[in-house]
Image 1 (cartoon, rainbow, N blue to C red):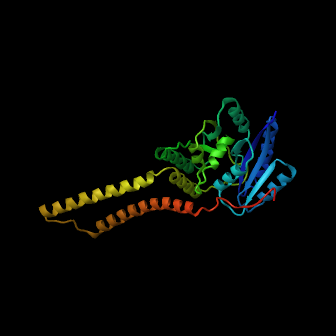
Image 2: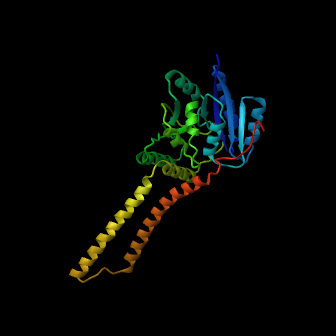
Image 3: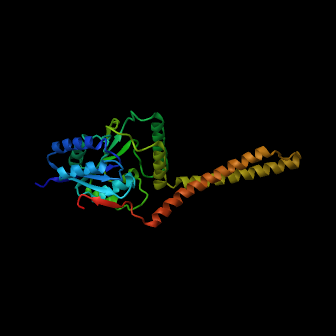
Amino acid sequence: MKKDLLTVVVPCYNEQESISYFYEEIIKIAEQMKNVNFEFLFVNDGSKDQTLKMIKDFSQKDKRVRYISFSRNFGKEAAMYAGLEYAKGDYVTIMDADLQDPPALLIEMYNTIINEGYDMVGTRRVTRKGEPPIRSFFARCFYKLINRMSKVEMVDGARDYRLMKRQVVDAILSLKEYNRYSKGLFSFVGFDTKWIEYENVKRVAGETKWSFWKLFLYALDGITAFSTVPLILAGIIGIVFCLISFVAIIAIIIKTLTVGDPTVGWPSLVCIIFFVSGVQLFCIGIMGQYLSKAYLETKHRPIYIIKETEES
């Protein structure tokens, strides 16, 4: 009986401190899943340390290890997309090299798909232990906000770590957009999905590459990629301020005709100008975000550029 092939896609960016631990752990899981053939596809996202050298060492001693190395850092979204494109497996999973995605869950995920008929099994954290409280607070706020604004459901605490059938992978690859927000794309394609919950796990070594500012920009990408509500909001704000201005003009005219004491005082006028100007710039900024996304899409630039693979 032919065994299923399972591809483990591992995006890597400066992971020399943790990648050896990851390789040891995933090998243990592969040995336990004797009814499945494995391939380990590492995607080197322009690392500046010894990450690529270590991956090459794995590849030389283990024929199941393949790798893709980018010409520069294109970001995790590009690395995941490249991994899905080059994955050969009947089933594909995406895992971080820092062991925050517990490899042991892969056994349960595979059994769930095989025995329960799901197309995809995702993982979500039920706790955020070890994270700065301010980051956890804004993360929860983001998921509440985007689920109100978008028709595509985003699961709070969802990770990129999930196991997918080939049909799901092909559906995701059919979405060729340059500005990618994979958590939304995984939900957008649909399919029957089961969620496995687990408590947050700290990095085995090294430091996270995601600063608060990078996460904030990533959240903006998610909102603009899956909702046009901010554009509608900008229009509503504009209408409201026009109405307020109209009412204020009528009130001033009536007061001038009845009392003869027109509103005076440049400080209040300056404050109003600054406030209204700020609102205008805010609305223009929202439209600029959408315009910039459209601009990048029309360029048709590649999502990533490969410098070398294990075959070259």
